[in-house]
Image (tube, rainbow, N blue to C red):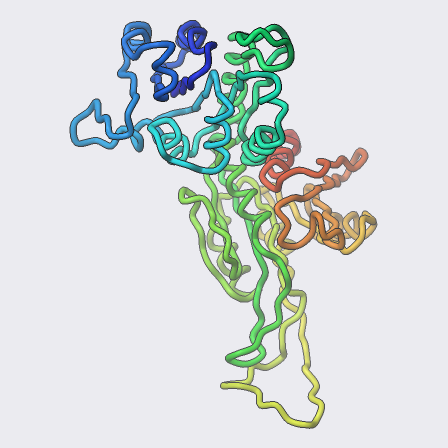
Length: 394
């Protein structure tokens, strides 16, 4: 296992040396990256001597000639740990800046991120730092909260770097978390479908695909191989996911039947149109002063069809309803032959269509429904997978 340890410019930087050793004892190869400010407190030679690995300080450093270190380190890392993380570094990470080697590595990485803040208590309590930490947490970063005590400036409050034992435990936790779906193939349907009326118009819905994208990212964080069958959306799916783009419900079902043959878990997060026009008008249906009637016929039930086609897979559905009642979700769970169903209230604009947040309610055949609470969609997705693992175990 490889851990990239980012050290920023806090007086607590000296403790990163012991943290590097603790991570090595836990089985990690540790590669250290220092910010400019960190070098006012510690030196590259210290960490190179301790770890036996190069220590990076500049964006253009290349320990291996002809290789881009920031890409290699980002791709090879199992975890990135920023300890101590100053207010400046936390804000830059949250904003997605890449203006030094540490933030460049972090931006290029897909592995888990662990952040251990250390700063003056007033800085730690500031609105900007809190917002930045919330942003990082919404992207699944693990925040190791600082402890309360006397800090270097002489003030007392919450801002002291957490103990090395706490940080190392958090690092091991997120790495182990990344193994809970290892070896699993997860198929996710995402976004809306578009059912053509003519060559210009179609029937659809307001699904943005954000929940599907969050599920794909979460599944990868947890170690799965991910396949996404997506209707037309503007969101980006993880680069490592296999993504098939479709337009209609029929196309979505056809693609899923082809791609889901070896899927261990199938999640139907797509908002598939229930009906489609009975006939398609070539060209454009012209406006007139007369009313028109549009005949609709049922679309295939994609998730029910997949449950029937792949009995060995754990099939989970979504029930997007404009109210928090669960009777409809429970009925779908039974009728479609699902292992579980996830209800979400799309009538609530704070967590409904196109929102960056959600609240999931997991309904199973036994036991009481459980709620994720309102979280980012990625945090909801991670919460969901961690609760599905016991339900989908062989």
